[in-house]
Image (tube, rainbow over all chains, first blue to last red; front, side, top):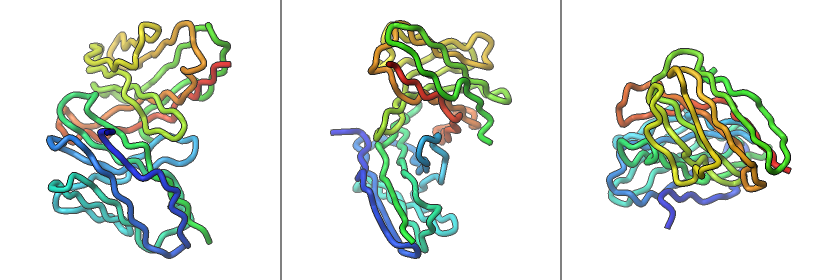
Length: 111
Length: 116
């Protein structure tokens, strides 16, 4: 089993729709969580951190469920510019090698 | 601007050649990471520096790979005797935090390596 798993997608949704995807992790001792966005042939860019209390930034909401060991990302009122791959990142501890990236979920927003 | 510059952006080489990539953080950051990313996968950890000390290496880093950070500022990643399987995006990242568990990584634009 992979340490961090994501549905690869693609998720193909119309503009204005709400879309959500999850990321599961296996290390129950994981301490911090993030969502990154990556455009085609570009570097990953930090989208938002994920806190136990949830985190909202405009149209984006991230949640953490420690009991079930998953994090989620919800995008409301999706825009064409939201089309990208969304990578979840789990930091399993103080070791640098414990920062684990998921394989990403591809999202495509159609007009 | 993430504050990390990588050079070159693209590198095409023949199998068996050596290649070297460079990562330049714009300002001083004591933590610097190298990752490798292949198509359809997330970045995979290669190695990590705190200042000039290389503190961690992944098992992905075979003896053909070496990384340095001689003065604790820029870093280089060298691949000797390249193989086709080395074709990937090589990403450098820094953090702005000071050792907390909340390590937010900021990536350079990467070097895309193609081994023919």
